[in-house]
Each structure stands twice: as C-alpha cells, then as structure tokens.
Image (tube, rainbow, N blue to C red; front, side, top):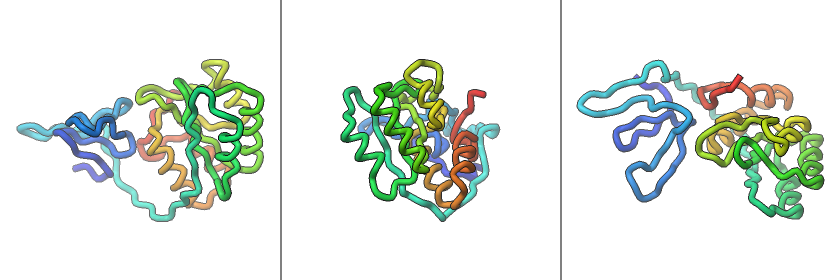
Length: 192
C-alpha cells in the first residue's frame, strides 16, 4: 500500500523525507509538520492515499556536502573554513526563520566567492515548521541575488540527501540548481 521510504512510530506512518526526530525520550518522537501522515493505525489502518508516492531507489550518491549551521555571532574565520573545506561541492545553509542570514559584507562576500567557484548553496530553515522565503526580509534578499537556492520547506535531512543524489548524477551545476528548486519525490511543498 505504501511503496516509499517511511517511518512508522506510535501508530503513525510518516513520509521519510518529510520527517525528523523531534524527541528522544517520548512517544511523540517523530514529526512531519509540513506534510500529513501517510497512514494512521488503530482498529483499522487508514491510508491517506492522496499523499503516497512510489519508491525509486538510487545508489549513486556524492557526499561532498557540508552544513553551515548559522548562529548569532558566527565568525568570519569559521564560515571561511567551512566554505573552503577541501572537496566541498555543496553547502546546506541552515538559516534563521524564513531563510535569513547575516548581512555583514564579509559573510555575503564569502558566499558569493563560494558560488563563483561552483559550490552550490542551498538555504534551509532551522525552524521545524514553515518555509524559506528568500526576499521576504532584507536579511535574505541578498542571498537570492547572489544565487543561493531556496529550500522552501525541505527538512535538513532531506536537503542533504537530495544534494547527495543530484551530485551523484554528475549533472551540470545549472541543472542541479534547477532540480533543487523543484519537488522531485515529495520532499518539498513549493510556495509558487
């Protein structure tokens, strides 16, 4: 009935690429705030068939990805070391709120230099619910202008996996950027 990767826990079946571990000590351990459950078990199993997709297995992955987890006061030295790490092909920018990041000249310059070197920057919110909406606030409009790709409501885990998959396909960077902004396997809900 559900030919896709899923997580079954506490009577609920969640889409794997829309779910994250929320709690390590209680039975409400997993959440999927931006996507409904695929099924709920009780006396009967109730399937949400409108939300179920078919599994497609891919084994060629490239894990030359790094996460730049933003925090107040992040330093130039740390940011520079992450963006210039040897072999990095893509960076998940784990940003604030609706995709906001520091607006310091040094920060924007480092991101711009990375993009010019062919490194893909994928903007994913740290918030468990909601979307990246680049350009909604001044602190994210520059990101959009320099070529940072919005991850909409993709989870951090799904963003990493999506990048690993796309990089593994040996596609041109422009094609990867296009596909990052698209819903490939139910991993994002596009605002457009």
